[in-house]
Image (cartoon, rainbow, N blue to C red; front, side, top):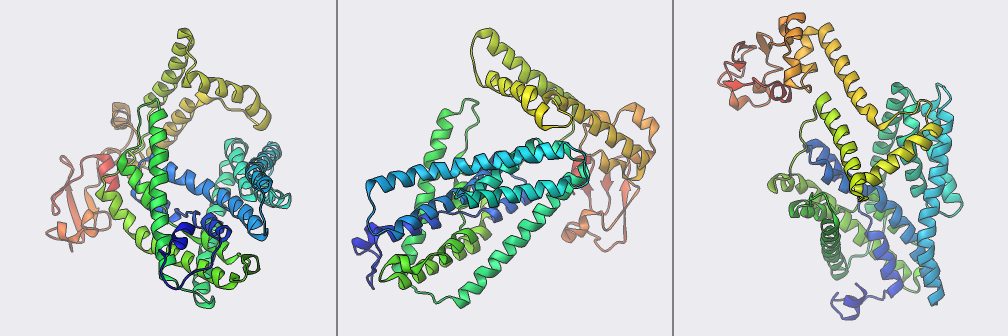
Length: 472
């Protein structure tokens, strides 16, 4: 951007923005906010690999951006920047990040030790200590956001196992509600600022900023994905279609705008007031464009690119057992062959975790191979619930294997409604309610069903498969 301005490519009127101010603007405009993208991904049910790529970026991007913004703000306040100051700034980037992570891990360990003691206030303790991690990290001059992330990672891995299910569910509910309220308040503030701020429009600067954001996003994503695909050994490459979604999902949001508003115009020199207003205007335009245009069109783009969806999860004892056996078998083969590969490294860290960390941080330490027992418990609970509620049995057992669902023992033990759909479907349950044009008689109060074929007669719709029936 600074080079384009010096070359006169931004047009009239000429701008007086130095290199430090340009770098400050670049440090804040890189803050992406893919919350809308994640919500669309959850609604569609895209592949988990793509979902967690976007989620990981949203988790760490804001923290890194704020650290970079604070460093650039300190540089802007200096009239002359020496090479040693640049070196200190680069070093402080790592110390602020890793120092904040260390504080978060310490508070996470403390929360695990407290939750080992049985208490009705465990959910309150987890939330309070995560907030304290943020406050303490910010007080010592390190990254409070990274501190809270580190604390949350430790709590999710160990502290939640010390809590009863209701307390853990309460923590999830409170944090989700708080995040939604915070997002709403921030965007409300954004809307108020659009009307209250004195904005300065410069067509060349605004449009070139948007174009450079899109180009740089594409180059960075394609470059990183090329490196990732080159070094991955499991053969699961990130497809070009997914890379396009990652490029298109670089929405700017509330973080970038909030950082723009926090700029001190007195640090920007003689033209500080004008440059601050121009940066706020540009950030507002990019935010509104990316959210309003790209955010609204990403769902059709996902469908047009035929992004693979996550297969429907199914409780299967055989799958869980096979997964555990294969993991241990591959680690054993690597050990016999004298090759220290991924499975051996994973087995080493799992052993270290079970031997030391879980014994110290969990009230009742769990082992990695207990996943088979957990799946078995869930299957038993579902079968028992289906036995006690035969009218809802078919929906309750929709995510278990058909061979278990149709086992002769359960056929004889449960009522006929356990295996057969009701002889009558109401309009509420019928797909005609969602798609009236698909039915020759959508206004009928009741729709009869052929028990033998599982066929909705008026709609001429086959619903024989349990998963399909539940999904419809």
